[in-house]
Image (cartoon, rainbow, N blue to C red; front, side, top):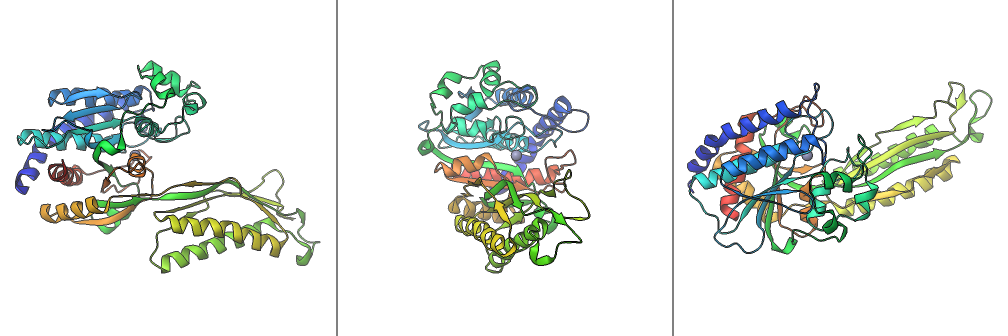
Length: 426
Ligand SMILES: [Zn+2]
């Protein structure tokens, strides 16, 4: 399909996108922002709107055991799962309209574009609306994508309870007619080996594209992490005037020392051109015991180190332990860091990244390579061995908040790139 044809055909389908976004906003607004509960009413609104739009477009629809929805443009060869364009329909409470939903709407517009151009792809292209990506509702992430790939541990069906209802994931799934028995048997709906490629368009959740004035990013990888959720430094409370320095076990100074030591590892990685972000999101003394005139005896804190590079995470985890030992020895304190938990990074397919950059060149879209700091369903597909790519669209106000924003002009550019990639890949 000629390049000018793609741009014009995507633009011709933009009213569909605008209508879907407007209906989604109107039907899931909670007075402050957008709320789409995983396996609940808000998410279902998105599924119903997407399914109706797919039927209007003449796409085949089907659902899997976990209730994910596939809206398929049939290819000439119907073997395998073909190309999947996925994204989630749930949201965190009082969020913006585009986190997740933009990917499903972009998929529908891109497929509509191919259909209207009379292109029958070589393989099926399925737009996949995914359930339960956000962990705010059940305390676990990526329920739909893991379940589709047969990677959801059955125990989570009963142990995960929704925060607003107290009912189990299995019960909420049953309400929606999901096949819980198949999930208990870890039956997978998607065989990764039979998926030709997975694409996901998503708003950027950080400020990089906006800062650099670039509308569309090609994602290099999704950062994994090494974390300590309930770290503590334990020293000894003492009188702040009476106890000399050599006899102190000051938990605050030890923790500050520790944070600086870990930041020095960040300096080292950054100087070598590596990828790392490090955050101590919580750091506090015990309000019932602390006082201006006490040497602090205990500090609680969290560590969240993220990188696309497993070696960087390995090295960071080693420093997290070794610096704790060193500072504990030097300052007469102890660190309790366990459990230290890891999530693997997910690398986007190098060939698909190259193609997306080439597509931006052909379509005249200004772009850049960008890591994803947040998790996405794409990580589950990539780590299952599927060739996976992500397109980010500029978003000036961050996400997981009602101020999240996306210009339709930027959405159109991201969707042109997606349609171009589908025409190339499928
Ligand atoms: Zn999202």
